[in-house]
Amino acid sequence: MANWLTRMLPSWPSRAKEGEYRPGPYMMSDGWLPAKAGSILNWWQAGYSLNPYGECGAMVEACISAYAQTVAMCPGDHWRKKADGGRERVTNSALSRVLKRPNDYQSSSDLLLNLTRRLYSKGEAFAIAIRSDRHEVTEIHLMRHGQALIAEDGSIFYHLSGNEIIERRYDLRDPIPARDVLHVRLHTPRHPLKGESPIIAATIDLALSGAALNQQVAFYLNEARPSFMLETDQKLTKQQVDDLRARWNEQTQGSNAGGTPILSWGLKASRVGGSPKDSQLAELLKMSEQNIALAFRMPLQVLGLGGTTFASTELLMQSWIASGLGFALNHIEEAFGLLFGLKGMPDEYLELDTKALLRSAYKDRIEALRLGVIGGIYSPDEAREAEDLPKVDGGHGAMPRVQQQVVPLSYGTDMKPPDPNKTAPAAPAPDREENDDDAGRSFDDFSRQIDELTARHANPLH
Image (cartoon, rainbow, N blue to C red; front, side, top):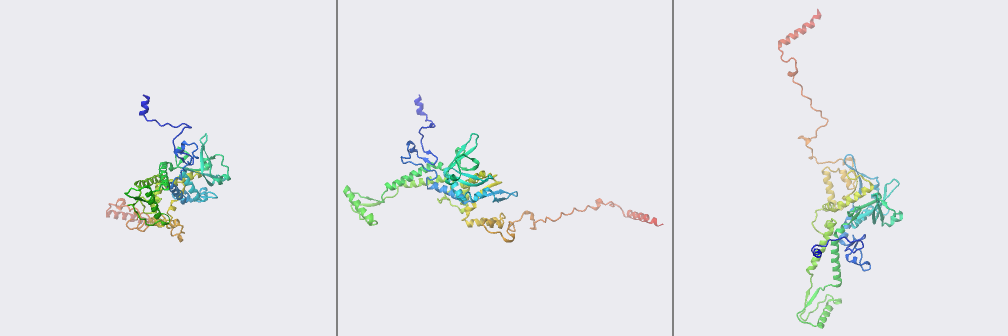
């Protein structure tokens, strides 16, 4: 009965115990170890080596370099929201100073380039912050290796290494508190403080393309096919075949290359073409490259690999910003914000300006500024400042402006704005018939009243 159940039910996968053999591939700190190497204890002596995460092929290198170089092109600024709803650039903060010069041996572009490269190749990037006596960050130094440590009370510390310059200046043997560490990480499926690269999702595609390319290299080195094949219906001996091959090689190789061979014995030369498997291999490699780009959320048009074309460079960059680049920029911005204690959006934040990506698209940039000025979004001085041009003399370009026909509905039919100094119209005078006491009196009544008034004033004269 037990044997029957064993045959009918599938074997449940069980986790290997410590010390037992586990099927590969094996993920290590510096790369992947092939599955076949797991059965060999001294695999490094058997010709096996680690496959680095970020250096597995041209497609992976193109994706990582595109992210790293593009992020390094975007200048960073420290912004703070104003009471009137606008924002102002902060130029005297610790963040603004570090963005201009992170340390004495790197520029801002160097820092962002290597930070983003390690982020996408390793899944996380580390940097140590050096503070002044006022506890302000004055320097940031990238570290190649980092390990998170959790204390008994839940406090987070880091062990950092991999920077020959900073290791000679400071003693980094003690754990470093998290407040002094810039830790940018991607997905954390195994540990909240351990990021993983998108390359892991494309491991199978990398293995497929690597195996196919290795097979092709071995084929062209050791199993190269001839360009032509000689055919005949006659039965030839080995000696005759050797003689014909020697005569053919004399006319087609060496100093006689390019000569015209004369065939006999009914020989016919037929060209050897590519097999359908070769075209299938090319399609397979193309599909694996597309899967790698999909894992990195990289539009193929950015890499120049075809696909749907865009009408302008701005549309192409906007598509990439909406897919993968925007997340990378925001992720790095938020990590810097935590290190420098910023309030966050929209009150106080770091912004890596993507306008620098349109530096070569001069026509698109000028057209956008022109429409912004005509629509009243920018003043002429603000548009000129975006192109590093001086303000208009006399202050004539300080105010935003629109075309004359763009007016609010309150202008009315006269096409004039309402006069704010104009007083309100006076209230209409009351009707005399309603408030006059003499209403309804006759002429005789008025005559008697006049006689009485005359007699009253005439009596004192007597």
